[in-house]
Image 1 (cartoon, rainbow, N blue to C red):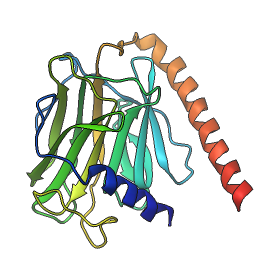
Image 2 (image 1 turned 90 degrees about the vertical axis):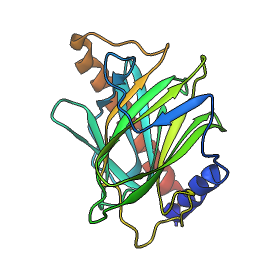
Image 3 (image 1 turned 45 degrees about the vertical axis):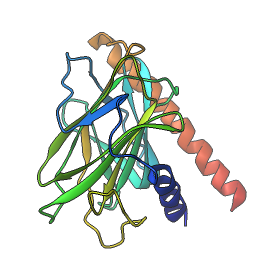
Length: 226
């Protein structure tokens, strides 16, 4: 039931998305490190199935929220890939845990398994206000970039698998192909500093502990209402 309620909420948030905006531009291009985008690094997953995972960037926490249960895995360099626990991934929201805004973001979507042509809707929000949205038709692994223009910023972005160029979808996407994974995630903006390599271990330990506490609190809350 939780999965269906989250799906309905995600659909409601995207239902009135326009195809393009002047404030935030979304393209199928890379946001490479050194161009203002900083790599998001992995907080190891606690191994408990839920719809939330964590990362870090420039001393700030990053929260990944899905409709389905999700998990993080490393590309070998500490950069996170977000996938579904049961290979199901149709939706992902990415935000700074602090709620701060940023002006750049980038990520890679792996090709959909067993599907030659697929559609994905990418939307950017400033709080609850939609500031950018675009639907892409793709047929292979593709990198994407979200960029604020003229000083415009956004607080989170959403990636949703859809069924056509109009951005229409049923939630959940019963019987549809799933995203294989979202990876090489990068975020940039005035509030994001790039830390020295020596600080990564300490940061990851701290955010790992934060993730463990948040997961423990959710489990206690579920037990209290069971």
